[in-house]
Image 1 (cartoon, protein in one colour):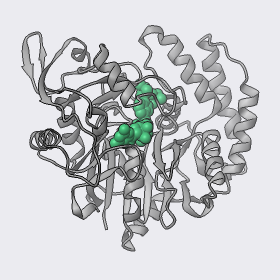
Image 2 (image 1 turned 90 degrees about the horizontal axis):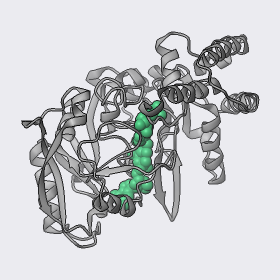
Image 3 (image 1 turned 30 degrees about the horizontal axis):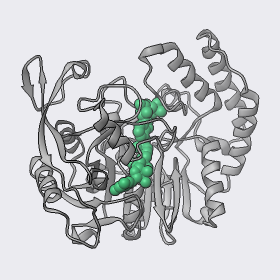
Image 4 (image 1 turned 30 degrees about the vertical axis):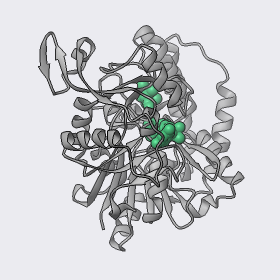
Length: 424
Ligand code: GDP
Ligand code: IMO
Ligand code: MG
């Protein structure tokens, strides 16, 4: 069997959680491969709403296992809070959840370092979620990190103290003032003990054995392709490879094991945090997208920046990920717009391009926009889509050379139109 991958095409929050939840009944295993509690994946069903940060979005389904892969960074405190919500729903988490021994741990001092780093950057800050993601990945590549498997070692506490000491020295050198570290640490150490209830696995073997046994696996991405550490608008990116290649390193699967790649995008664009956003709208249309789409961060509550769909960026993401099928979400948010626009190319100093330029040039460019008539009607999964929406879908399919296999029409599981019968 092969591993299908579902990942974001934009700047995150495309609706990955909802769609993974919808697709889970077709899979035996859902595996997160990168990111950490900077992610906020929202699921809605039976009148209830859940936001998952570290736990894969298949967790509410009875016969599917969920794996937190080696590429993920875990804050045991956030994980424990997520599990408390599962316990309230009587989800038997110890039977459905596995953690890779090779996943790295976010320490309380990583969070302080994140805050110190952002404070030092002042107006140039990344707009990080301040969950300690950057400093934890820095320790991983710097070969200083602590991993989940380390908590089973007799000298774990000693290793923790050594890394903590190093962090404190760094924070002090940055003249960053903080308090409350002792409470943060005692909660963290308690949460490590709590985490030991969840089976730790050598996940690269687990997943490859599952594939050999014919199990169906879906890899769940976090963030989006335009936040990728290599290909996003650096430095306004996250600290991991969010693109499909990250599924190989973040789970230990070979590139030839990748099956379908589902690229998920909103019918418009949003971004939270700093950095270039060519189609951003600063006017009442942008505000309308924010209000109708409830565009406020699932992790931080920050208002998301909103703008039109950007075909230059979408085609770039399709190329980087080898997308085989596209999924469009939040089409319903555009129900009441007279005109809907998309960026077809960029103009940089009067020169037209349909390629994303090197990062800094993104600041000074103007998008060339094409207008579509709005459909001005409600959408339902039981009815034909209005012709104007079909024209919009066909345009994106033609430009990307990729079929749109699912159109999401609302936040609930049931508000989903599956166009590709193989996926029904
Ligand atoms: P993720 O990070 O990609 O999982 O996305 P988020 O959960 O951060 O943000 C997506 C938001 O849009 C959540 O509040 C979802 O409940 C909601 N959502 C998902 N799909 C749709 C849709 O098709 N229509 C509408 N109106 N909301 C949606
Ligand atoms: P999901 O999985 C949207 C953004 C932050 C910031 C930048 C770096 O829910 O789509 P970090 O905390 O990684 O240091 O922040 O990346 N960011 C996200 N934006 N959705 C996310 O995840 C994000 N995770 C990080 O806002 O601009
Ligand atoms: Mg999100």
